Image (cartoon, rainbow, N blue to C red; front, top):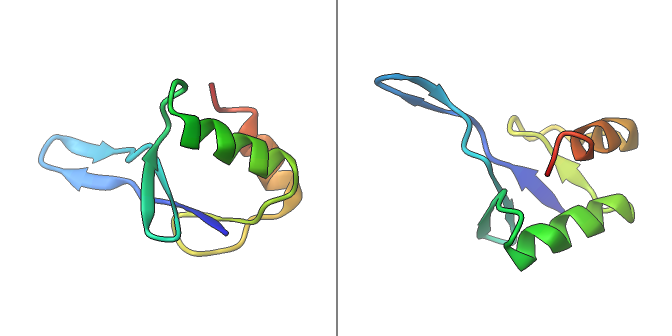
Length: 70
């Protein structure tokens, strides 16, 4: 199960954390990161994903989300 991390409120405004978590491992959305590549592959093969609020995403939502990634 993967979980997206929430946006972070800073003095200059809302900042997207651009990270996800799996088993207390935090990984940035960085195309060269092998864990990030595994994350994308796992999702495309049907892995579960929770949004930043903790709600499990549907397969359709995951597919749409994957389309936004590099």
